[in-house]
Every structure is written in structure tokens, then in C-alpha cells.
Length: 228
Ligand code: 5GP
Image (cartoon, rainbow, N blue to C red; front, side, top):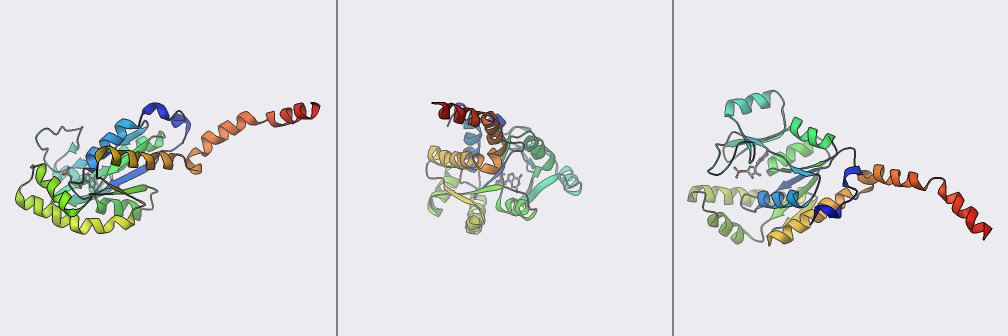
């Protein structure tokens, strides 16, 4: 995918689209989403707030907004989150204001959130395009979780147990993408984004501007053709 292939992006919409990507832990959804936003213009990954401590190599304001549990709870009370969830004992949430700022300028946002968060966004009647990413099999997911070796045996088992429940949610989503091979999966999600951007409801403004340029020309053309 390249940025140059979308000449009408800037004119396409007054308001951006909200994409949700969910997948069991270890499916590679964050890598997928990062690759996706690198390859497409006007698409931004939301930066969640979390009460989880930063892992080695993670940066505040880059990977997450790392905040205390007390501050997280205050934000929940203030209604600052579009959605939030307790995942593996830590709180994660999406800021309504941050998301709205991007959508309001006509750019698209990708939320990489768990199934509970996706359910909350849907239940609020917010228009979204949601995508569920599946690993090719349970055995491959287990291999990937063990391969990244950042978790203890107990944590890996917990993630697998949660994954067994979460995969059953796939039918609540509009799209399913299997992450068998990274580049292929990125291309599949990219195709979904581009297709959603080409919907009439999204393209109406840009299309109408083009239609304007035809006004007054049709009769002239007819006039010329009848003269011949
Ligand atoms: P991790 O701690 O491994 O970075 O993320 C754990 C889980 O939290 C992942 O499944 C991830 O999708 C989910 N997550 C990250 N940010 C958010 C968020 O803002 N809201 C919700 N509901 N889940 C999130």
C-alpha cells in the first residue's frame, strides 16, 4: 500500500471513519494496525490510556498514555472514555476527546481494543467499521504467545483461556481477517479501509464537487452534437 494511491483522500469526507480492530492477545493486532497506519494516509491509531505499568522499551505518549489507577478512575467518573475495560487486571480506555478531534478533521481512526470495549462502542450507537482478527489456529496462537516470551507460564495460560472465550465473538464484527502472514493480513485490512472510504455516504461530498464541474456543460455538448 502506498500513500500516493489515494488522491482524493483530503476531500473525501467531512467526518472520519472509526475502525475497530479486536483480536485475542498474541494475534499480532498491534503490529497489524501499526503497519496499516504507516501504509495509508489520513488514518491514525488511537493511543489508549492505561493503568498498566510500562513494559521495558515502551514509552509514555507513544505506546500508551500511562497513568495511575487513581487518575484512570477519575477519567471514568468524568466520562472521558468512549469505552474502557479491565483487561488482565489492568484498565485500558479510549479518550472520547482525542478520538473526536481526529474524526472531526475528517481523518480516520483505528481503535485496537478488546471485545468488551468494542461491545461498549457498539452499544452507544456509534457508527463503526469493526474487524476481528483471528490467528490461523489455537496451536499457532499458543506458539506465538510462547515465542514472544514476555509472559510467565501462568500469564500465557490466562491469555489462552481468555482467547478461547474471545474468538467466539467474531460474528459480532462486520469483517474477519486471518493473520496467517503479516503482509497479507495488512493488505486485507487495508482493502477493507479503502472499500469503506469508497462508500457513497463517505464520497458524497467529493462526488458532488465533481458533479458541479459538469453543470452547464451537458447542454453545450448537446448543442455541438446537434450542430454537426
Ligand atoms: P497489552 O497490555 O498487551 O498492551 O494489551 C492488553 C489488551 O488490552 C489487548 O487485548 C488490547 O487490545 C487491549 N487494549 C489496549 N488498549 C485498549 C483500550 O483502550 N480499550 C480496550 N477496551 N482494550 C484495550
